[in-house]
Every structure is written in C-alpha cells, then in structure tokens.
Length: 107
Length: 398
Image 1 (cartoon, helix red, strand yellow):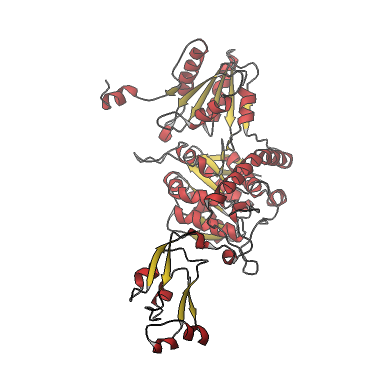
Image 2: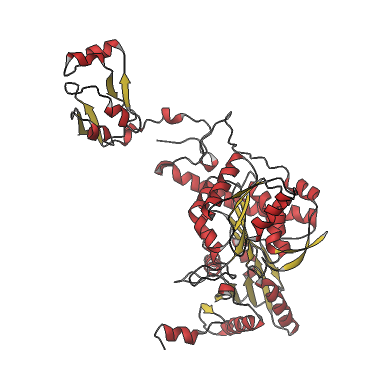
C-alpha cells in the first residue's frame, strides 16, 4: 500500500474511497460456502459486519446454484465478497446448518 | 485603555477580542472564572459565541475539536486534573491539526490534593503536540492569548496552543492591563478562515480517520515540521504584535546577561521576583543575569544556546518534577547543549511546587548553590525550601 498524497491532519477530502481500498488482504482464514448444505436462510447475510455477504436475487443464479432441496432455489443466493471479507468468521459461527467452512487463506 | 483584571479574565478578554465563536468548558479551580466570565459576556450580549456547558473536561476538549473541525475559532480553559483528564484527547486535537487555544491556570496535581500553582499540569502535556506559552503577568496572558490564535491558525502551523497562567498568583490577582481596542485586534487577527477543511455537507470529507503503520508516521512527521515552522511564525507574530501594540515578546528573553557568569532561568510569575533579585545583586556588583522562557513548545533551543553559551553556571528554576530524573526544563536545556563544543554547568532547582511561595530566600539559596558550582561539584537536581529532614525520617532514612 502506498500513499502519494499526505493531507495535514489526515483529512480525507474525497470520501467514499473505501470502495477503492480492498480490505480482503487482511484475511488469514476465509469462509467458503458449501451450497449443497446452504438453506439460503440469509442469517450470514444479516450478521456480516462488513457487509461482505452479498444477496444475489436473479433467476439464473438462483436456479443454477446447487441447493439441498429443489424448492429452495426460489430463494436468493448468498455469495461472499472476498474483496472486502476480513475473515472474522462470524458467518461461519452463525450458520445454523454448518454450510460455511472456515479455511486457511492460501496466497 | 487600562483595565484592572484578574489573570483568568485576561484569557476571557483574549477570547472575546479574538471573537471566539465556540467555548466548550468545564469549570475547575483555579480557571473557573474563564468560562464564568465568558458566560457573562455572552449573557450581556457583548460576545457572540456559543457556550457549551459539558459534563467533563474530556467532553470539553472533544466538543472543542468538533467545533474547530466545523471551521470556527474555538477557545477553552482548564487546569490541573482537568487538563490531565483531557490528556488522550489533546493528541487528537493536534493530530487533526486544529488551531484551538486553551487557557490553563497552572496548578499542581493530586495527591495530595492541592489547588495552588505549579507547572506540572502543562509539563505533563508536553508531548501532546500542543504549543505551550507561559505568561509572567496578566498582560502577558491577554497578549499571548490573542497571539496564540494567530500563531495556531497560520497555514504553516495549524497546531493547537496552550497559554499558562500561574494559579492564584496570576489567575486570581488583579493587575492593571492595557486592553487592546477591538478594531486593532480585528485587524491583527483577521477573520478566522479555516484554510484546510470545513465540515460542510456540500463538500464532504472524512476527519479523524484510521492510519495503518504504512501511513501513521507521515502524519507525525507533518506535526514535527509544523512545530519547526512554528518557531519562525511565533517570531513573526511577536514582531507584528509589537509593531501594532507596542509590547515586545520573545520566546526567550535575557536580561542583565552582558558579562553574566551565572544565569537564572525562570518561567511564569516567578520571573518578576527573579528580576528584582537579579537587579539587587547587580547593584552589589554580582555578575548575574536572568533568562525567561515564554515559549516552551516548540522548545526555543537556538535562542537558549545563544543567550546561555557564555555563562559559567545556569540555574534552572522550575515548578515541575519528573520523578526519577529532574525537572523538564533542566532536562531539555541540557539536551539542547549536549552537542555544543562548550557548555555551561547546568543545575536544576525544584521550587514552588503546590503553590509554595518563591521568595528572595529561595533565590538566595539557589544563587548560593550556583555560585559554589563555579568552582565545586554540587548536586545536579536541588530541591529548595523543603523540610528534607522530616521527609527522610518518614522514608526511614534518618
């Protein structure tokens, strides 16, 4: 990470730049969703503090993503945004059906 | 126009004349009269400012930061435990480069609880990144209070500043003060224009952001540069003030220093007594001089070296103690000389803690030790006017 422009007092004059700073590099462990088990309850999506769990609601993704039961394919799919996920493990901890694995990040 | 005012009022009048717009403050002895007087000015319609009564000093300085970040001129006042309670927030004010001015009624810290004068409160805030000025008189309190805004707000500086007035000796003592005209102060200070950032929804900005190890040091280096710049700005502002108001200020003032063999270094109100003492000794033919430090941060290293380099012994008299080493002024003055090819013998005299009077008797003892030091080895750190025997008994050493 480099900073070409230093402002006095650390003032950030162009707000909203968190979009540019990908904070996913902090991660040591990363959550991985096992879609064969995921019941699409959205609990992880609610608990994620970042929020780095994305809710995908388009028909194609819903139908093409595996699910434990066919009827669940009517529900939105959760996906992890690894650009920002810091690997806190809250989703892994909260998932009621243990559909999220927490594995060491390999770079 | 002359006015008879107490030291606390000199800060209140400085804020009024500087047209301070926000004053968040929490009362504490001995600086309570500052917010009291400002409330009175506002209630009487003499001052157009927002007074924010807060629940603690921690909140007072936090509110001052918020108001200053909004882009208005801000002043507050505190003392002793109040300044200590502000401590962590003081770093935020300087790190965010907000030119807040704070009047301090220099007072001892507990325990034992004591409301009287020493400089321990401001000395303990030495490393917070604030500029520090110490007034000798109420006139100096008023003048430094006004000048502090001009120095702090200078685009080359942008650092907060403290102006210290000795508890009771100045804060509660009525002295005649030359009160500048509002118009002159307006011309001198100009309207406050936040030249860096304003909290404005149309021009959003992030203030007080997080900095990683990759960036943090650059911001600290920026503050270091600003403090270096302040040395020059302070001289310029002191000179401009003299041209307009006729009163001369220096970061370090030497008196009776020609051919002096011994120099007494003072800060704050003890300087008046010291001047009289030195004058009397000079009449007797003693080669003694007086050096008053007005600006302690930035530390006026160059000026002190220049004025003290040719004396034999420097007697630093100070109302603070860093237990385990000595006084802060002694420590810094010693450091200032450490790489000089020749240097005087520098001695420390701890005096006047917790409001103990500093009298001619004190100066006589100090001068006696300093004179002896020309030829002999003496203690580097000397406690003066202390019942040492009783203390040593209590500590089981006698």
